[in-house]
Amino acid sequence: MATTARLRVTVNGETRESEVESRLLLVHYLRDHLGLTGTHIGCDTSNCGACTVHVDGEAVKSCTLLAVQSDGSEVTTIEGLASDGQLHPLQEAFWKHHGLQCGYCTPGMIMAAADLLERHPNPSEEDVRHGLEGNLCRCTGYHNIVKAVIDAAGGEVEPTSEEVSA
Image (cartoon, rainbow, N blue to C red; front, side, top):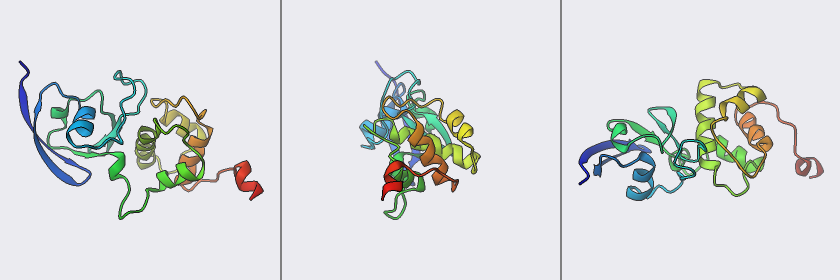
């Protein structure tokens, strides 16, 4: 029989209290209990980063953290990144630079990038590539993702062929 624990966590600015199984992963709490399905489950082994969220301001792969370990913490998911109906600059930049294809990795990639920019607001291309190493994308080849992160940071980005021909 599974044991339960009381959980009180602030998610995207809203305090939530729940009784959860002690073995419940944070990713499942967010998706199944709170309905925040922007946090994706990709591998359940912490290799892909699709489940990345912020816990107390730091990027965390939510498939590696028990929900009860976030008790008393502030959690931000991709749904909480936008404010006042406006996309976050990273979300805008991913759209602008075609930094997504299927979109499955995008929420985790954006959350990891937001953490990177918080710690290193003016990254080089090498910094971005290194900062996103724990997040996998099987569609884009990363070039446009890196461009999007640099653009969101206010850096110089080479225009895409579509932007040049427009």
